[in-house]
Length: 91
Image (cartoon, rainbow, N blue to C red):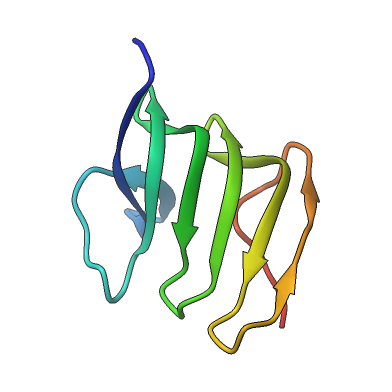
């Protein structure tokens, strides 16, 4: 399956954290960017339900490499991710 542009939502369903093509903008995490095999893969932006944003590279649904993490109040960090678990960020 080739890479395409699109929108995915991240949420826990049936006890597992997964990506979905449909979701709720207010309660689910939302990804906009390159998608491959139903997961973020390539360049994109993930918005947390609380308004934090991560923009950068993704691989197999996880952050990969350097990106930018921004909080709603404007705090910015530039983490480097390698085989991250999933979108964990502590204020």
